[in-house]
Amino acid sequence: MNYPIKAFCLNGNVDGEKIEVFIEEIFGFPENTAYDGGYDFKGTVNICVGSYAVNSGIIYSSTGALYRLLTSLKQCYQSLKGTAKLCHSLENDFIFDLKMTKWGHGVIEGEYQEFPDVNNKLTFEMETDQTCILIAINALQYIETLFGNELGKRTKQALDCV
Image (cartoon, rainbow, N blue to C red):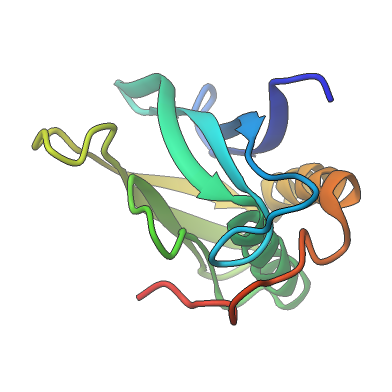
């Protein structure tokens, strides 16, 4: 497999605003699954919201977390309501919620903290719409094809992020 692999990009309604995640390294594929499903990975995130930016920030997550995001994004896209969440049950260095508002628009609120022992954190909010959500769904479906339709056997029951 050639790395990096773009997991998804959610563009904002303002030019240049985006949240973009790349998978840089997969751990255990295909033999060992992650604690919360799928396969653990080390990745990078680019966040550009207003005049604030994170460039190639390191994150740790799992393809199981991406699968749960894909599932909830599909529901939001189809119903134009609800919330989609990206979170990992063991790592909270990068989390966000996409809440659908009305007329196909959504608001993404989240946080990124590169080092848990350093009190530097980017808290961000960005508006998006259903066309941007579809682009992210398509990218995440590609990740699903690479790592299986369940994105790995679950060694333990899937955990919801609190």
